[in-house]
Length: 140
Image 1 (cartoon, one colour):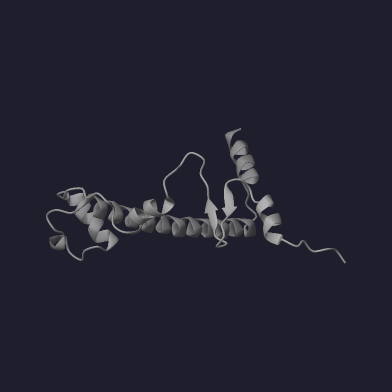
Image 2 (cartoon, rainbow, N blue to C red; image 1 turned 60 degrees about the vertical axis):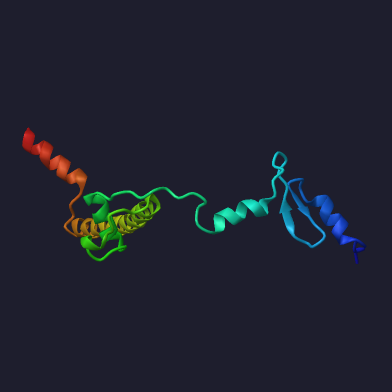
């Protein structure tokens, strides 16, 4: 049987890299060499709304369509005269995600269609080589 270390915390502290240190409360803290600000003050701004507010923006017809397609409003008349840039950006992001999901589904359907078409041509004993040989025979 091996001998267990008497002080496992001191052994653990020696093995932890310089960027991570254990404090007395057993919490991992990240030490940044060039940053002297406390990380708690920075995280408070990120939790809520942004600390700045950009004035309103008059949405164009295209922006109104984006709001409708992304599901923010039911009718074009429901869109207010001025909206924030954050709201437009959020609607565009939501629509971008929806469009990427649609493209993924269409790609999978295209792959399935090509696989089915390839199996059908295999049953008819057709191949690109035989089609090419037939084409060259007709050209002579």
